[in-house]
Length: 47
Length: 487
Image (cartoon, rainbow over all chains, first blue to last red):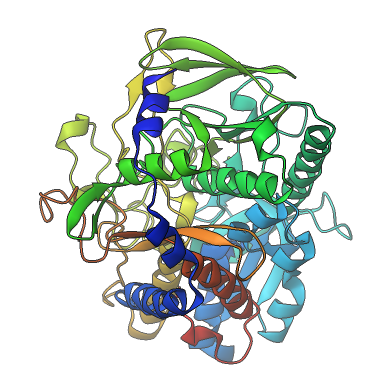
């Protein structure tokens, strides 16, 4: 196994709570709004 | 009446054409030259490449849009620029050869007052023996046609897995100098997702092959995110993503030869190696499209306008200095040609002044040097500011101050989204600001603003990518109020 594969195997996995958070439609809707606004603002910085 | 000729109708060129015409109206001419009859929203080619979206959803014909907007369109390939004109006319000119089936092979010379070179890349599959779908052994998602072929090959892999065979899928780059590792990363996650959806992931090995020195470098030197109060590098973030999805990786490597079963590569740390594969999607390196340049007397001045790579020289510092001495200030601000300020080079067409990720060589001398990306948001911004500068030059004269969009100040977003189902998809969303790190301004956070450089995994990014697909196609079709959608 190469060094990079060893590092991948040693990398932390998300907790069960984090997995649920990633798929929770309500939490993710809030994140969708926040992400959309963040990207819109970044794109407008140089307009 | 001024005449603006734009070479290329991708993100940068099409954006420039629409903005220039919107600002100038009927008083001035805007002309677009593109060898392709259709516009392609390239980020969604990834979904076409796994069979989740038909190719027709990522393209539309350019001619009707340009007809509606009163933009002159030539479906043709630009072959040479004559910035000083010729014996008949002192105005600059572009030589073109038509690819339009009705005029195929015919040539013409178009005069211009201002020229925007947004020709994008030449896909250099020939750089690695055996690379690419045309005469090689690997798939690509660079064009909708390539992506359709990739999806068919992936279907075959899934069928063989269902029949009980084991399969190895390799996704990544096809040469040591490739860019757009983000697209390869996204395709790898999509392949993993499709194999899981088909219930055959346990019999498949997915390998990510990259020229990046470590995962998460993306040719931009990597990123640092703040996550729950602690700093996480993009490399740690990616390693965790790959662990979760059981994706193997080969990094800091360059494919050297590809046969129908084996990818031979050379690695900076481990030397030569090879991997057997059943299906491989490897991106090609990019080069300039091979435009030539001639002065008024017909002398070849290509080297005065273009770098040896074929990309256009603009207002960057191309001085030959060691990698450790480059600065963010070396990068162009206005994208104007120093030889001819009425010529602009934008998007992939401009020559970057240097690599962002430290270039390396293997013991055998194979170059492993990820090229800087200049696609997506920055590309659109460059097209827009080039158009705005030209508009001001036309209206205010030569003293007009040029608009600027330097990559060490521009931000970018990369969303690697998987799946089609609104509740079962997922995405890894990254934003970075600036694209080119400024180590003097942000010395403690890998050259970037930590407040605007983020990584996030979840459904939200999946919805965002779907929304961007719809929004950018709406914008590119120049439908009502298209210009309110930012680049």
